[in-house]
Image 1 (cartoon, helix red, strand yellow):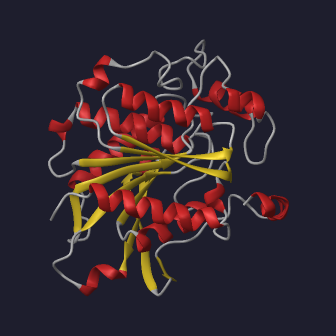
Image 2 (cartoon, rainbow, N blue to C red):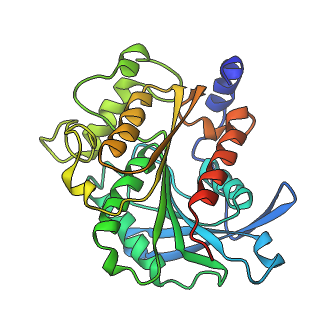
Length: 311
C-alpha cells in the first residue's frame, strides 16, 4: 500500500467521502450477489440499520449464517451505513464470510455527545434481538465489529451486552472485531509521537474529535477513551467477554492504542488476537484496490469461522 499512497491520497482528495449508496439495491461481488435494505428502529433519533444479505444463503436451506453487527467509523461525527465506503466494505464482507450484516446508523457529534452513541448502539442490538431477520440468520453466532470510532463503540456495546446478557433472547455474542479502534489517553504513545502527521488521521484531529465527543470537563483519560489505561479490569475479568480480533496499521498513529488494547484483554484473562498490516494507513479499507483490503476480508472470514457457534 505504501508504494501507491500518493496516488491513493490524490484520488481520495478528489472524491466525495460523503458519497452515498442507495438501498434497496443488489450488487454482484465475485459472482455472489448481496442485497441491501434499510430497517428503521427509531426515526425520532435517526436510529436504523442497513441489512446486507448474500445470495449464497439460498443455495442450501439448512445453512445458517452468522450475524455481524457493524459500527462505522468517522470520529463519532461523520458518515453512516449508506456512506459508500462502509456500504462497499459490508457488501464485500457479507459475500466473503459469508454473513448477514446489520450496519448501524447512530447519532453524531457535535450535536450528540457521549454517551449517546453507546446508547444508540446498545438499543440497536436489543432491537435486532427481536427483529424479523432472514430465517437463515444465526443470532447465536453474533459478532460485533467496527472500525475506528466504530471499533471503540463496538467494545463498549459488547461490554454492556455481556453484562446484561439476560436482556437478550436470541443474540449470543461469540466474537468482537476492532478494526483500527479509536482509543486514546492523555499520555502520548510512541506511534502518536512518531506519526504526528500522516494521511487520513493525525494527532491534532484526534484531540479535536475527543473534545467534541466527551462531556464538558473530561479529558482523554475518560474511561470511554482510555479503555486500557487503568491496567487489568477486575470487572471485565468476571465477564464472559468474547474472543477479540484487533487489526492495526503500521502507518496509523492509533496502532499502539490497538496493541495495548489487545494486550490488556489478555491481562484481563480474555482471548485476543492481533493482526498488523505494516504498510496500512488509517482507514485503508476505504481503498479496495490495495492488497490489505483482501487480506482483511480473509482475516475476518477466518476469525468468524473459528468462533462461529456450531449449528
